[in-house]
Image (cartoon, rainbow, N blue to C red; front, side, top):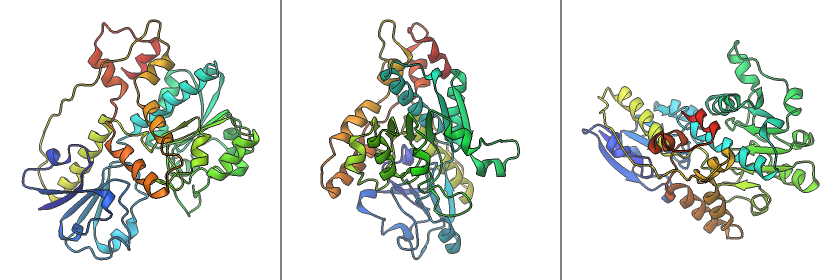
Length: 366
């Protein structure tokens, strides 16, 4: 059978069964014309699937996205075409949790404050929101969980009220982008929300969940302390003005770790094999992580920051400010797909061994 895959999917050729003929495409060239001539198509969020990009299924029977989110795919359209759809839900939850953790401690450190002095509101309590909450609970940081749709689906989950959420100092978003339904998330964080005087807003979910114009106005007027963005409304042609005023600005990489990318590929291949009744090969991949960066009497904030790549991404993204949108978009995409991805903290610590001196809080990764 013929499989067409995004060339940036991690170890994708190696994970496929030997009897699959795999071709790769560059998503920067647009939707691949050869897709309808294949049995399966494997993509990331940069490839849009809808009636315009795929009017005729041809031979396609299966489309899988090696990502947790799927708002780039019109699932109703695929259902009409009779194409099976699969995604890698939860693959990057831990990576996003670590990104939020590192950003929060960097922000608090810049204020010479302890995060335990603040209350964190988590909007969206699926895989990523729950991962963030687990880390906060381990560290004794107070959280408020806000997810009315989940409360309706799962009687065991109790969502905070909007009033309780608005009493938080910090709010982080972990929702899909939805335009309709009972709880649409497009511009969920709007002027009304931002009038509550939050000290920090983080969005690593989807661009558009936070109204960037309202965000910028709140920051400039002093209603909002700071904001951290990993996703952008007009991504990849992000707003220069919004990026300039961000405390941290990164190119949609919160979930980008070696482990997350490996899990994503493995999960989507597993679903492909199940659908086509193929035997999934067992293959082990070993890649040595870099050495931990240690300092004498290192704080947890510096440990997190020095052993992540957030600073690199922030630096490189800010270099794109002022470029023409076409150039900026291409560079933003290249920054996401071509930068060597980070290892998660647990892998780094395990590789370093027991003799390594670590801040006590790093035990949460073991």
